Length: 261
Image (cartoon, rainbow, N blue to C red; front, side):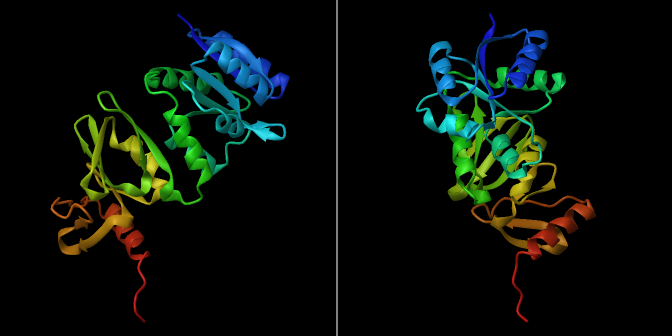
């Protein structure tokens, strides 16, 4: 069974190039419609119920996010397409929202990997939460107010405000998100993957098992290399023996403080 997809792009040459690559290299998907504007896209989404929408960020006088804001319900995943790969804040918002991203001109390997990841992660029992996360992230200018989308096979998908994460803790194949007020949410995965996502939001890897939000560091005991976190003071969180890592963390932590003159 092939996966229905639609393409939304205002330039025919780009439409044709993407459709050709999908036909040649992504046998699991079928392009049901090619749309040039938001009105056409909304009609195609209603008609074909796609699992993936390839969405150009720039659509003439509008943009792809305008389409998402107009939809009340959605059960598809989004792979954004853009000629600009240097929009750092935009890419961060897309990444933590579990949406895909490919750049123009489209590389076939990048395209195949994006499609495979979206198909692997797709869960149509919990529609649209990744898009809601994305729309929220695009509407806020405060980094720690952004949301990250976490999936759990049993508990489902959950949007967590980045500023509510005190630290992340790895345990075998699981990552536990320890939140303010001692709440938590767990997922399957590696801490390294979340380190890449959260590092721009003032999270620091202090050792193999812990990734901490520097905003919740309560105390540092230098001679023991212990870090005491707010909300979780009973957890012994010894930093890595790696001197460079420890010094980088200390510098970042100290730079946040105002010292008396």
